[in-house]
Image (cartoon, rainbow, N blue to C red; front, side, top):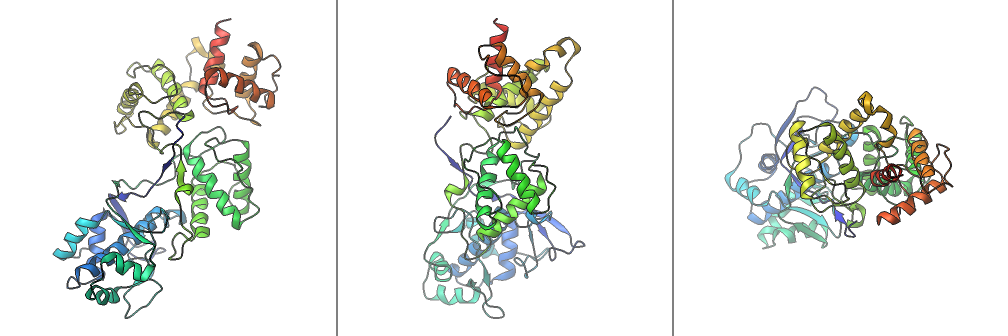
Length: 448
């Protein structure tokens, strides 16, 4: 397991979906356009090409940061809408359909479209509120006053600091990527392992500061255990969601909405997101060199899939994402008509789990008797119950762990036995049963 952590920093989207009207106007059209064209349109709709260069740049940086903040916190998707931003100036920035661009403004946008504002040590793009300064005034930037400041010789960052404070900084040359929703695409439930869970648990802990009825996660890890299920049920009960204990799309975006609200992420005086708030051990994509429980599960799933799918090459089971892993992923992606990147992204991961479960649920008659020896597809941990826990305890009891009773409930003796196996395997002693522990037990039974 790597000791370093990674931050999920904002990216500049390639495309953006604009709602041509106020949010609740269901008759208004949505259009999806290149992000850079959106910024050019807003800039040409709101500022004048005759303004000084520094004023134009300061305004464009504020406009970029405003929309990136909307995207980063998923302001509209978390409220149930299917667009990223509106063109209604009562809510967002002015976007004029089919308007032409001024050459000098267009060139400046081409130069700085992937720059944005942050405040202090915060990660999220700053909610750079602004107004024209003549017809309307606000607590943020005054567009017309930027002209006066530019004429005084102030630079773009000096202009921005005049309005937003001296702790304003510019992030330059941010990466450009597709705008992908944070929701992992499938519901997270008991037995899952995902870096998404670190993020959700951290957000719920912050929400709990404002809603004390929500219990705190004492440990932030990637496992969906019994404690996670219980806290999710409590959260769902408080906010009138179906109390399933599953993080479905509605629950995910309710958490997102409340987190944005309590942190005031879309406010000029935001509490903000710091690096510690978004640290994960791994990106939400897996690449060569990554390791850990998700890689273990990935390798096991691919091993089983390759056994029943000749077009997918096999691999040696381990806990490190290797070049061999990449080639298997590419073969799988090609077979299921996914983008053949060799990277384990959310769409590929969801499809692999779907295919694995389909295979496990439809085993050929001649090997159906060995079904209990095939990993059940979920991580088992303290307090969990079910036939897969029973199968695990039977294997433990038949091997060297005779004090483990077959109860169907994952108890402390089961957990301790798994920790002993993890010590033998020289992996993290979590007491959680994943594919490596399961495979070890099967091998021990086959050798006796």
